[in-house]
Length: 191
Image 1 (cartoon, rainbow, N blue to C red):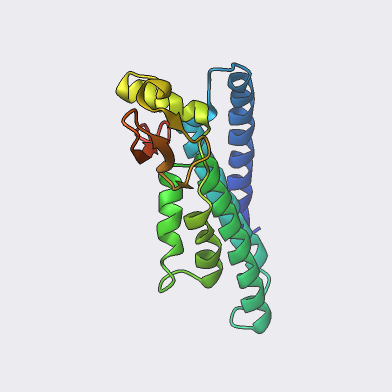
Image 2 (cartoon, rainbow, N blue to C red):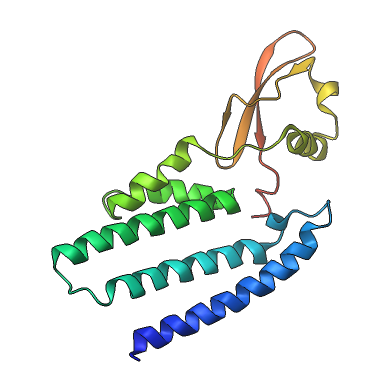
């Protein structure tokens, strides 16, 4: 076949092999209750590599047989853009933290990226994943050396808002003042 087909097949084989290796080791690690797969940079990078390979293959395979400059080509390219943007959005949500931040920035580049990308990635501004109360308690314990109940008379479990790097909870201090507590998502510093 032509160079693009050979390259796509090699990339697909390598991607499948990497996915099998990461999946097997990830499945084993996931079985231990104290390990979060997102703790491993290789997992986040592996997801990024697999997503990039899938997007590249989609463009190569979908557009190779359609004549450039035709309406059919433009329609098909728009469909590939949308599929690729959704894959990128899923990657950002899976990898969290700085990946969501990068996705948010990409969503604002409407002067540079196709609309399918910017419209899809803008969702990351309003739908950032939330950390659990247990995770927030751990961050406070690690950063301040105290439990939530030692610092606040009350602390609302549901955040007022969540962003890519942190979330905000309503709490009441021992002196009766109501405050907003901004807590960084766990492991953001490590990313």
